[in-house]
Image (cartoon, rainbow, N blue to C red; front, side, top):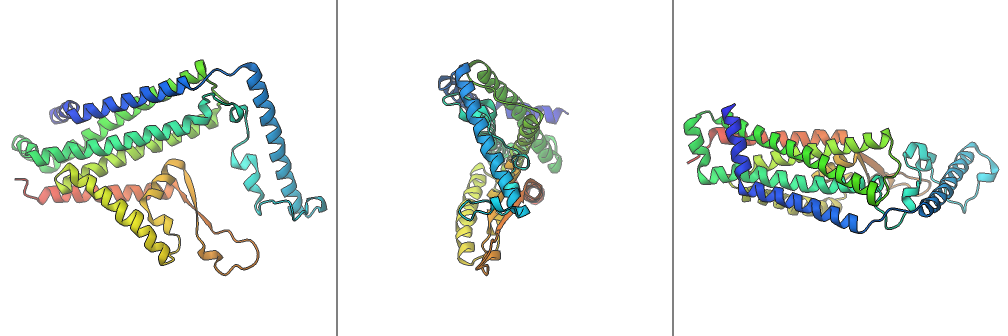
Length: 337
């Protein structure tokens, strides 16, 4: 317990951590101030006009869906080759798609919480991912480079215990900060929507979806923190972690993507870590693979395939666990002097 408290105090006392927290607060203030300055409370006339537009759009969607179902039943009135309808009617079914136009979609210069909460949440997650990675890498990288770990091992000569405590304390601190920042962030914008914007239609489904995205976002922050910690442990320096990420982005995300296109690799998008990150945050991403449609000269061919958050979780977990295990193995055997 004394080791955990000591590591927590050392982490909080690091100037880089304090600087990143200040930058996080500054980003909050700038984003909230910009939103507040560019929004206004809609009048009853604006809301009424927006509701009329939304009702008209819902009627069009429902009519198109009914026409699609009639076509599948073989009814003559729906057989119009000049009128496009998807092969799968569920693509325009508002119930299946879980989306229907609301007044919030037609309000201009108005901050609408339900419309922008997802984008705001992703902005927060992106900053926290950067925060977690850099703090995780610098936390262990600076100690290894300066000899601080050696001094600590003189007092507690158990390498695995020391490194595990450092990682656990780091993940716990980042988790607490992420939760507190998320609550303050979303509450701030909810208040802005109440006093100078439009909350929009919120129900249990909206809050459940937002909570699920937030939970996956916090998970990604912890993954990034552990990855930064592991890379810096293996490389013995903060710059080694940053360099490893840059090398991966250039060599595989850019170079590998180009090579897979040249070689006509089937489903190349599922081999890129960035796509799994996107699928983890969004819940599901769909990509196009031309291979199944190569011989389809006539008729409809659907070459799309999904990446779901379930598969993304397995990939991210195995990737993080592999790097962390490697870091502990290297730390256990390496000469630290």
